[in-house]
Length: 460
Image 1 (tube, one colour):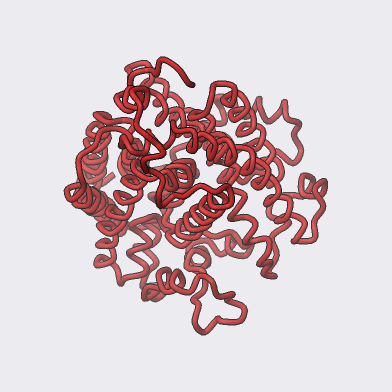
Image 2 (cartoon, rainbow, N blue to C red):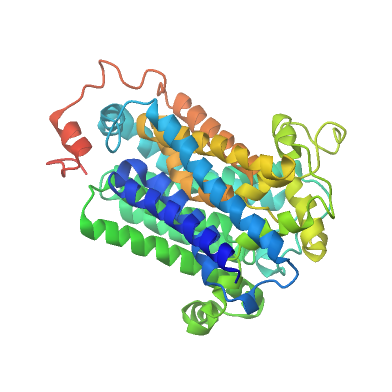
């Protein structure tokens, strides 16, 4: 590898590593930041630095690799700057805010979480059933089809809408850690069972399955007081999720002719992890290189199509194709891997690549500063608002992975759908999110013990 490219990748890893170390000082409050920078540093720093030249995609020039490495480095600097700039104008708090802890532990807050636990468990499963049936499939047939066979050129709007609400199934595994202890085995069992079912039913799609397991990790981290052994446990859980994501990518290639036992053998086999650095999800920096290599030489820049599409997300493109641009991730797939596009499989261009192909090359990397500010805002709201804490706290691992891949349109839709659904359910239960902290929900000594990280004497 060119020495300059290697040095830039190492600098990217160091910047992200420094942000991760900084976040460890307040793990419960800044865990989202740790997740984002750990992922960016791994994909755009560590992995490309460690990948031997002979294993990289040979189609790309050294010049494109140099530019992609530079985009990644500048991108993480701007992402950090945007996040830190937002934090600079917010009051300093440690962990979750006292107001949020008070709401969570109040009678009203506990009633809300219990109802969301059961309702979202049912609605998440029901949304998946609707998404299957609305495409003309039976529940048994969906487990038997080959991967991608269910994908068709027709647009199934009901199925697409229902899929956005399947993510409600992530909430029970998250909120169970903030309910009495009896809910925890139920929440964990539900999340694991749903993740297995969704993986098998989709013949290998990992997104929702990993989101369900990530919700468990997020709930455990935000609930527990910070201690050395818990930091180690969270780190091991994150590493396990990464390894599982790598192994499931291989498992789905052969699962149609394997039993569950055979799939478990594949997952636990060391051979499964050979060459993991050049496979999804660890090789995603290669798609940033592809963006530099192919745009604008093979395809013109998209002139902000991702964000123009976002502004009119509610319009069906079948009827408003002149207003709503085509899916940029599908356009990118058509340029980078036509075979993938023919199978109706999108390929995102990474977070920096999204800015690059939308906003005329290098100027597009400035979008990373805005991305950093947005994620800083989301983290702040998760620490201070019960609505954002439940809706996006549960979803954050799912959203973070999509963000790093470079899918702002999907992040927006999933975030809006989940926030809207949780708000509506809360209002149906008679819970006022606007007036969540009020004289009727006093702060008790137990609440403040929880806020400080000490184990409550009573309760859960």
